[in-house]
Every structure is written in structure tokens, then in C-alpha cells.
Length: 177
Image (tube, rainbow, N blue to C red):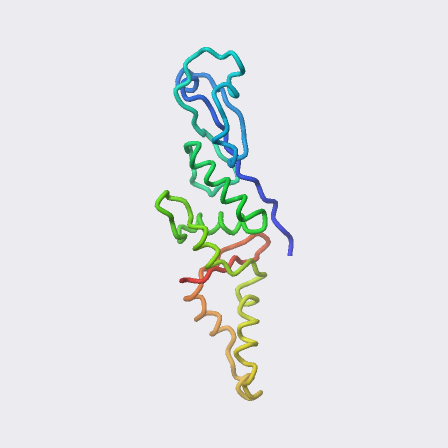
């Protein structure tokens, strides 16, 4: 299965005073580094103007629908990316975009809930269930296996899982807890 290109979460941090005055002063940084951005870094040393607040005016690599955010929220998204890595980040983004994710009090996805529910990226939901079906049928007589309806089992099992589209026609599988 091919792996989708993962975009590291980044934010464009800008000076709010300059923005309100019609100037774009800012730079792109990895989300995890958002809290380390200072007015001096954006304006250069010796800046003597008034810089009331820094803000993230644009984002990339975050779930769709996330617009302008503060530096703390950007850093929290960056920390989640660092905790999950490239392999699981796209699944977290898909889970968040599905709006069926478990949310923390700060409005961000709950990493412990994600880790508890996520079952992996599979070529299809049927491929995910194949191992479960094989285990279930291990002691069945051949005559019972022959009459087993795998399609009906898969259809019924979808009530216990959230199945989300993944790149290349694959599926992210999440258990309902």
C-alpha cells in the first residue's frame, strides 16, 4: 500500500498590530515551535514599534476547518504531531475531520481516546475483519464455515466501528468505545 505524503503541521505566525495596520509581518514555523516565536524574531532585532499580540493567521497540515488560532493551540497541535509521528498523523486528521472524535476540554482531539480506538490503516474494512473472522472460525466445522456470510458480517460489524477513507482507497478503522 502506498503511503500518503504527510504535511508536518505548520502555522504562519504574524504580528496582530501590523496586520490591523494593513502590513503582513510574520513567518511560517512548525506548529510545535509556535510558542517560541517572539516579536523580535518577526520584526528583527531593534524593533521599537508596538506589538500587542502574535497570532497564527494561516495553517497547513492541520484538519480542514481549522482557521486562525492562537500560539498555544498551534503548539498543542504540534505536540500531538510529535507524539503520533508521520504514520498515525493522517489518521488523527481524518478522525478529527469526521467530527466523531473525542474532544478534550481545550477543543482538541483526545490522544488517549485516539490511541484506544484506532485500529490502523487497512486496504479495506473487510481486510481488517479477515483476521477476526479467521480467529472466530478456528474451531468451526467446515460445513459451518462454508455457509458463513462474510458480507453480512462486515455490514453488521460497521456498527461497532468508524471506517474513514484513507489515501489510495484504503480505510482508517476506529472502534466505537
